[in-house]
Image (cartoon, rainbow, N blue to C red; front, side, top):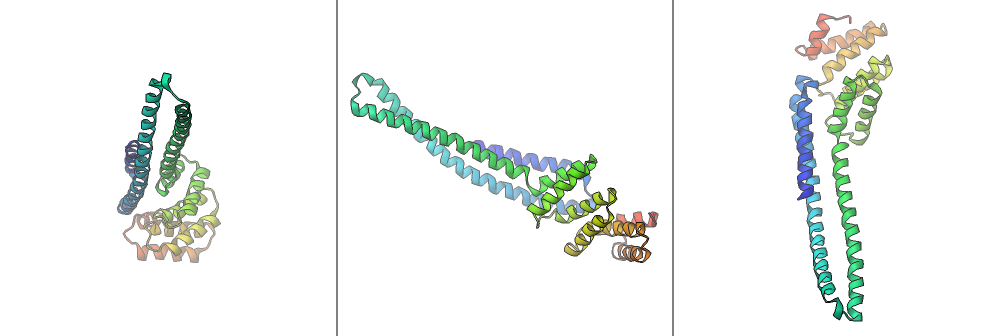
Length: 242
C-alpha cells in the first residue's frame, strides 16, 4: 500500500505540473498533449501495478518475519529450560531473521529507485525540463535534454516538437545549417505535425539569411498555401522579410 500511494501521488503530481505548464505550448498542440499525457499516465499506472504486486509479496515476507519473532520470543521466555537443540534453532532463526530483514530493506530501496527513475526520465518530463531550460535561456541544457528524449524515446509523441525546438535553439545560436537540418527532419518524418507551419516560417527565415530568395519563396508559398489560417502565416504576412 505504501508504494501504491507513493506512485499514485507522484503520477498525479506529474500530471498537475504538466497541466500548469500548458501555457508554454501553442494552442493547436493542446489536444495532442492531452492524449500524450493520458498515455503517460497509463504507463505510470502499469508501473504502480507492478510495484503493488511486489509490495504484496514483501508483506507476505514481513508476516513470516513476525512469525519468526514470535517464535523467538517464545523460545527466549523458556530459555532456562532450553536444550542444545533449541539453542541451535535459536541461532538458525536469528540468522534467517537478519538475512530476510536485509533483503526486505534492499527490495524497498530498489522499488523506490525504480519508481523514481520511471517518473524522472519519462519522455514527458524530459520535454518539460527542456522547455523550462529554454525559457531560462539555458540553450545547452535544453538541447541536451531534447537529444536525450529522441535517443530514449524515438517514437514519442514529443519527438516532432523536439526536432522543432532543436532547430529554434540552433537558429538562436546562429547555427543555420543545424537548424535547417532539424527542420527538414521534422518535415520528412512528421508531415502532420502541428509544428509544420512554424517550421516552414523558420525555413523561410533561414533561406533569407543565406540570400537564397528562390528557396525562401518556396517555403513562403508552402506556408501560405497549406496553412493560410495558422499563426505562423499571420506572422509571416505581417513581416514577410523578417
